[in-house]
Image 1 (spheres, rainbow, N blue to C red):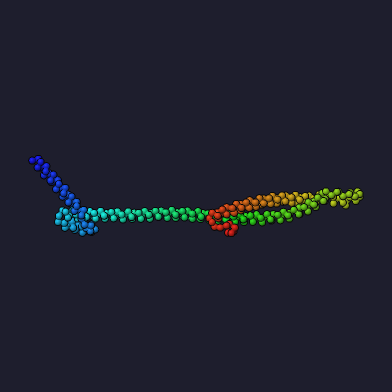
Image 2 (image 1 turned 90 degrees about the vertical axis):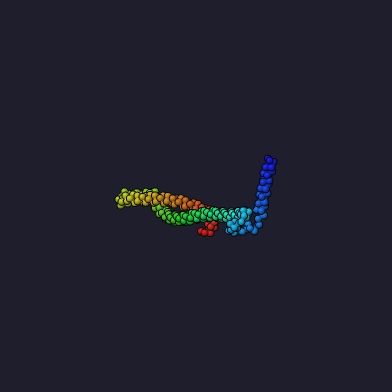
Amino acid sequence: MSRLLLANEERDEALLRARQLQQAAELESFPLEDVDMDVSELLQRVCGADSVRDVQRVGSALVQRLRSALQRRSDITAQEMKAVMEERDGSIAKYKRLEQEVMREREQRASEMELLRLQRERGGALEDRRQLEAGLQLLRVNHSDSVSPAASLAAANQTPLHAPPPKTPPPRATPPETPTLRATPPETLPLQEQVQQLWKEKQSVEAELQRCQEAEREASERVRRLERLVEVLRKKVGTGSLRAVI
């Protein structure tokens, strides 16, 4: 009896496995053209199926259709995301390039403004130098004009001071000459004062001349420094040679 029950169980299991294998084979042999059917058509076929086997076959095709649709959607999304990322990378690269161009433009504009400022400063220094040269020339002319009268006055002043005293006439002839001897000191004192005044003016003119020469040297040195700096800035911004612009 037990052997009969065991045989029945084995038979049932074999039938079940055979049925499962048959269903799997039927699912695998489902026609490919049905897979490409529209989802609505597959749903209609599921609703109109007469047996469980038809429902399983159409349902499997529907699932496969949905999976392929999801895969295509995933591929499309991945492609769109890739395109967006490429566009983002291109935008970032373009932004960095534009930022560098803006930085270079700002540096160039700052260099040009600095160049214009230095050119104005150089023009002012050249104008100061021309004014100093004109003042120096005027001081030289005044100095040369003041030296000649001072020399003539000094020569005229030295003649009565160092000349030998005139011979004294006889006592009887002295009364008419006494007023002349007494009038000599009042005439020599103003000449000495004039010589001293001219000497002081000469020293003042020489000091002013020396100061103007020092100022001219400082202005020349400043102009040279500015010219060198302008030349460096012109080379930096690439606007050509300094001499050509000047």
